[in-house]
Length: 417
Ligand code: UD1
Image (cartoon, helix red, strand yellow):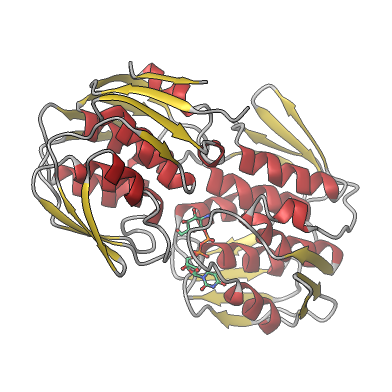
């Protein structure tokens, strides 16, 4: 039977949470293990359905994966080529990250078009343009990408847009090419930097992640080893926005405040009290917050699209009016019709939402339309008076491990049935 979350909201949040490892860093790193010729141990694995899907794809390619306590062990020693079909790629858009590593390891990749959350058209033209610029031959036929890498050579490529996934896939495709590859106008997200750190720890020679140019000096092979994946800035931001919406006092550990500077700067404009430490954030909110006038989502270090629905919940119960503009994905207002049922006052025009803060939201039966909208609904349920039932929570499980257990640590009344 389909699982649901039931929340009895309207209570303040108090307590401490240790933030889990980042899904969006783990995914490309898992794909990157395909480049290694020895066993890799990734510490602090988090049991998310997206990560299970990526593991399943690696196993399809004859990599051995197993858990040893909290550590995920991947043995890619005997990896062998296999076609990646729709049944795997529809589960996971990040399957596209495998193009680069597969081309590097097998000199070919046959992969069905990727799936993932339906938050927009999500083209892959930049991925393909970049691989072609490095000499890959790619044929798109019958819903599959047939890619051949025998003639790939290092070179320079300027991305049309700083796509996170394209940056990561191209970086991995160039690691085993002889000579220097330069990627310009790349994504500066911390997850790209974490991928660079992982690959370098395995013997790659990459520089520049975190800036807009990445330089890759080819090496003959990558070894294996141990790596600790960064903590999840979006999960941390979700808890901060939850406490800001509900009120209360929380402390997050295992989190880097630098990765959430834009969110922290917005929250600091309200009556929230935020204290940051090297790997810890404390937030206290003891009264209704005032709205933030204008917010727009943009690539890092600006406000992330992955926190937009959660921010919409906070603005829905703040005092005043907020204009929230989504610039990354065209269908990322799926939460609005659900918040409407709970009493929010939101008008959508093109890519912007005009949010007039209301004093209260009220519990309702609502449906998650994608991962982050689902997280937003959990926040809405926590802040609303009465009971909220959330369906389609598979979406939430893609990116938050047992979200109900985490919020219980903050004294929330939430359960999964
Ligand atoms: C990653 C994150 C996702 C986040 C997004 C933006 C992972 C697993 N997912 O997704 O959570 O919301 O970054 O921060 O890390 N685009 C093109 N052509 C392309 C590629 C992208 O037009 O070839 C467009 C997309 O449609 C979108 C924008 O570029 O409008 C950003 O996409 P991108 O940065 O590639 O996001 P993902 O890597 O898919």
